[in-house]
Length: 297
Image 1 (tube, one colour):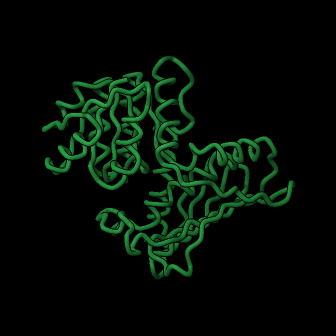
Image 2 (image 1 turned 30 degrees about the vertical axis):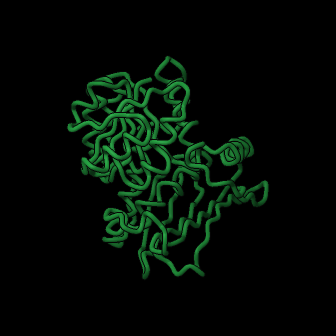
């Protein structure tokens, strides 16, 4: 599968580009970026070519991988889908429900495959844990703490303008939502509150009556950082396993799923339709935090 990469930031360097270059079933064709010099540098590093235009790169590939802020990713993804190209997107797929739904409609109409890189969901330890949790059932509660800081020395994401503006709700919130949805099912009500240091507290009521509690931030003091997920119910308490941080490996699994779906196999569980559901939940949380109301979905 011929891939074009859009984006030249830290995530493109850490995950997208090396994973595309290493995958045996991928031809890494080219890179487009808002900074032409950075695009040329990244492309040269991985034996690809820098493209001066978005449309030019879309025209030359079978699939696009996008490592850009959500509001920039969404229109590129839409153009690529309408051109019949498969999509490898970052989370969240968009900042608005309307933009996410428009991508879903384009993907459906064109019949192309899609995968959204909820990174940890592609790691085998977590995938196995969630499969077992779904099979066990009987859960009445989930709690996910995804609390840390991107502003510590050496963290490459601290300079990200969209993360500074949108905070943990939109940056790490997608990961938290992607953990609870497959186990507890669709969300019907969302309530949220944001406190000091970007501490976002989100309550999700699921269709079956279970409640998820999400605590999210990318700006806490280092001593307050934590990452944990658990489910509680008839089977007791099950805590998600610790797992190695392997973004290139996770991206490789995502590429496998995209290629399989494009070849007529089953669609990925983490396709743009799933991504749009996550966007709807996060948008509802943002609205709730601003209005002080519970939002019905």
